[in-house]
Image 1: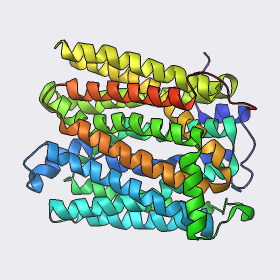
Image 2: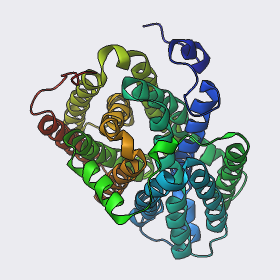
Image 3: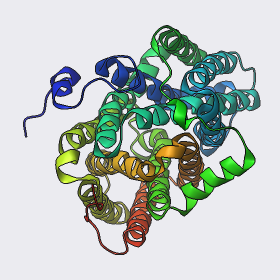
Length: 420
């Protein structure tokens, strides 16, 4: 397959400028990715610093350090339930600006935290704040695109956004060579300020006036009801949740796996980058094939591949034959399948809910993030010095996700949506 090397090469093959954004397509994708990257930066740059943070703040248990990741994810999930209806009422732009400003302030607070408990409090607030960017970014894309085009735009944004996990652990490790761990939170503060300036300077309102909704209990209840009772929206939201849980379990455990299981902590940023790079490659390929093959054919095939890879990987881990290279290869293959499925699951979950896109994004973000964080935390807490817990978690999540998709589609996989 002839895959273009830059976004510019792909743009002429996609669409014209977004109908409501008022900025060029390339800037729209770049801004979307920059907003989404705020979450990834806040998580992945922390991974090399977990031992240093734990030692500096008196955290004895290595598994307890996983709260630095999990508490942020819980804040991210809970915050999303608020920003959807708020952005449906007052518009996307003011919510984005307010959330980004709060993120920068909370990052600064975390940098100055004198204890582990206060650090966790600021991490929770940091997650609550950045949730605005998660919800409103998805809503902005839904404001401007629909159907397979929406899946394609999301895939392009994911491709740029996924470059951040590829680089973030290496960035974090590099920063730690020159400054203490608090410097990482200073860098997050700077990123938040830069994105805030971009938003204030360039971003217009994307919410169509006809779709503004008052903040009324019966309206919110109706949006929640539609989000939770539409078969397609509910099914793919739950599938996202369990698969995301596997990813969060990997993130919680990866630093300990390389330090305690393989005794090669210096390899963690490089291998993590290779694994995340496979996710980015999958998103790039998805952007080229999804309109031709359809979201169901691509995502269902990828989900089956995910389950198959993790079953093999679990067998290797249980047999005691795991090496750093078998771990890297199996996880890279699984993350490739992950990248082909998750963007499409998100697009299919949002597709029936255009008129309540903001609230729908909130509900789906809340369920998938909080549920995924709890699943991932459970996987991480079972870490026992081997790779068995994380591979078992991946395998169980894949099987559960496939079962949910089978129920959602009434046992018929790969079937294009009627009228698509």
